[in-house]
Image (tube, rainbow, N blue to C red; front, top):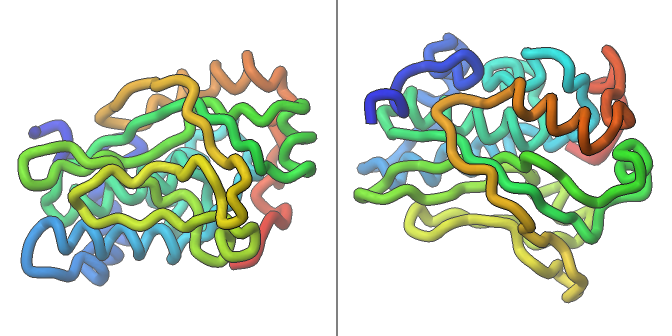
Length: 215
């Protein structure tokens, strides 16, 4: 478990802001309660924003995601893992390729016409002797706007995307597991993006300034 408690290049759990955030939000009498509190702090305290410059290391880093107050699934998962480690809870990050059947036309266009999201990121927390998946990607305001079922987390069961939305429309489909890692495999993610989206998803240095959804 040692590697899942130590800081990483992207899961920078000893960064002062990450440590302070974890200390503020990791409330509870045991690790499970603290993990639940951290999950909701990251889910709703950091806005989901998929328009990023994916060539930069900072785009994948937990502390940067926290400082900006927004990020996509990969750094949000890294942030939850970093906060958990700062609170003494073993954590790692996992990835899967998913199809989002409800993705917006704007995002589909930027992705070259596909609804396949490679290397969707989530967190795995070691609680009560087992690894439990937690997916803090979509903040509550975004879910409400798009009528997507928000993901809850109880520290006992895997929290993964729902297959259908509030109106029973097909939503998320998991098509490939990529495995779990002690730190974000940023280079592998960049290669997969380059292969899957032939540069249509490399949105330039000011990508994060684009508007996607409400806070």
